[in-house]
Image (cartoon, rainbow, N blue to C red; front, top):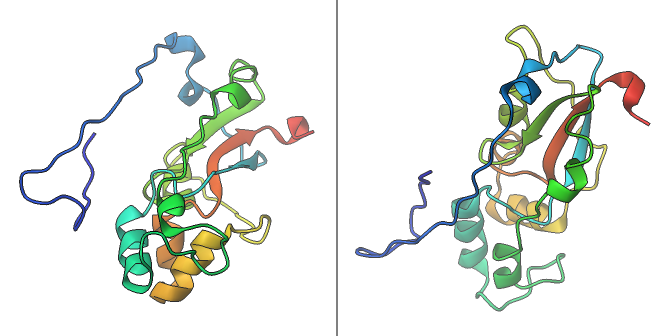
Length: 174
């Protein structure tokens, strides 16, 4: 995978990426399941930015702060916010992957909640998200306020505290 990261690499610099590859039997693949209009989205919390919006975060935060400064309202430094570990959802999901009530999974990466989740829905389906259903972590609010980032833009470029969405049958929510 490649990523556009303007302002991050100097000429002649590059990075090395680790990759995890998995195998699944075709009949067990989530895309073979049917998502119903009555299914429910369950958001699992992120541990920070994960794979979202680093160019925007760096631009906004480093114009106001030094790398070791505490970002107002977060209690953490710029460095700690930018380097927060990307949570693995494997342990949370491994026991439910074969459950028929789990009809879809959306990993919230670049493109935010809406664009990533729309990828697993049918072409005639849409989302109904209650954006006030969870408390947005302070780092996202700081980036939005400091950078004067419009709500639509922050929703499209950041996970806003939701790192993975499970789509489940309404009867299985409990």
